[in-house]
Amino acid sequence: MAAVGERRVTYDARGLAEPFADIPRVAKIEGATAVFDAHELSTRQINLELRWLLYEEGVKEVTVLNPGAKHSLGVGILTRCRITFEGSLGYFGCGLIDGPEIHIAGRVGWSSCENMMSGVVVIESNAGSLTAAAIRGGDVVVKGQVGARTGIDQKGGTVIVLGDAGSMTGFMMQRGRQILCGNVGHGLGDSMYDGQIYVAGKVRSLGIDCVPGEWEDRDTEFIERKFRIYGLGEPPEFQKFVCGKQLYNYDQLEPSERKLVL
Image 1 (cartoon, rainbow, N blue to C red):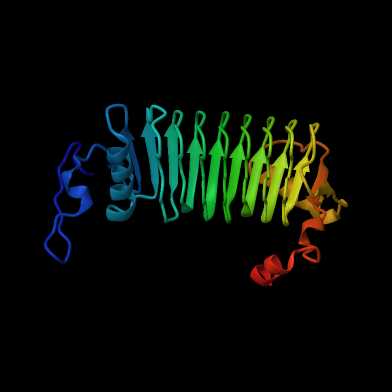
Image 2 (tube, rainbow, N blue to C red):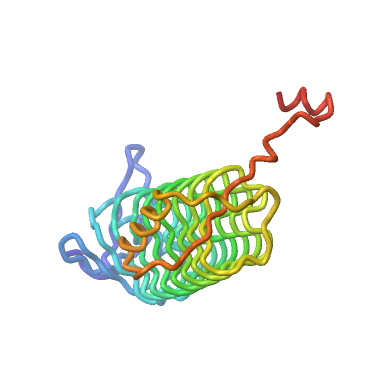
């Protein structure tokens, strides 16, 4: 077990102190698990503590107490592990991740899980606007409501929202799936290129080129499987929306535009 508050100085091949050197260790480690209180730590200290535990000590499961809704926590984690934040996060939480399973006991601010590559993030409460922007893989589960432009420019993965979603959800969606159990604001799926959006509640309005889709058996199987994996109970009845592919047509381009595109 590592001593609480221990200062570890390590050096790279050039003899320079590594980033972990100036951060006092605060985590209590027991085997492959660790826990630390982030109440008096800065964002940098929290993230460096996580990296030290995961990359230097080989810990596989970390619990962070009292994150205090600080911004940019849990970003850039590129390994398979489990992280639990016992509280809320601020803006840009858990962005640029590839592999971890993250559980957030509170709510999150804007742009959580942005550019996520793989893994799972489960948020027990509400999430702000731009949740899961440009994700390429993995699952983002929000058990409360989400703000506007959820899943903007989504390129893969799955977004599950148990509550309502704001306007322009699925804007410029390129691939992946969204399962929205509540009501959705104006402009659903605006300018989407591909992917599927499932909505159980009411849709204020559809965006450009977003149209109702034909339901298939694989849609039922997919939704039931996701609900079963995350213990979300019996899924409600959904309507499916897809791209109408009217924006695929370049025949009306001006000659100068055609040269640039084609």
